[in-house]
Image 1 (cartoon, helix red, strand yellow):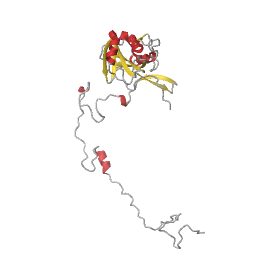
Image 2: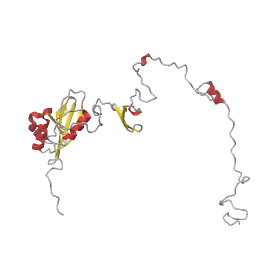
Image 3: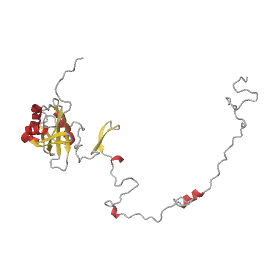
Image 4: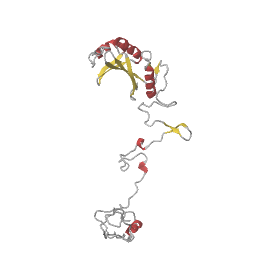
Length: 278
């Protein structure tokens, strides 16, 4: 049997050894930081140099494919967003990640000039996080509905959103309504409906605890714990039930005849009930 032709010399398993040093030297002044994290090689580059950095990695270091782009939100940072580019070298069988940071009003240069597919990926990051990509020829929402307000994957975006979209059978169209919180999405101040909070909520300090004169108990029979009217009703005697009937073994008057024979019951003439009685 003829062996399969080898299309390229990519190793089955690629190593990160020497990658950080080699690519850091190649990126030069464009590089902000480089590290290996969770088995992944991660480079952070200057935002205004992202297009040049990715083109260099594609043309001179064989990272031919932009596999994915992702956004990350860190609200406590001055530049709260990170945009992550995930690159693959099919000839080296190796992946690297390149990151840039951006603020809400700081645009990131588009990389559609390096990989046209980035147009779709940048639209998704824009839709979910609100990151602006300068130079993208078609920067508009790609996942959310027309007229959607906000960016759903920001940390400050409410879990339930701001409006509820549904199809109205009455109006025969899609309508927007204020969100109605279901039980699953409500925030309670206690662990369960039977156990209240052990602290005073704002406004509750003015409320007095309802007095309990004495606890209701049901220590003896006839005391229901619900007051005298209920006790009186509970104490009333009821008529005894009808006695249970006992089987005498004799057929009752006007009882219908058996339709089939039973092993322990035979007619007086020895007929087993299956014979012809005509």
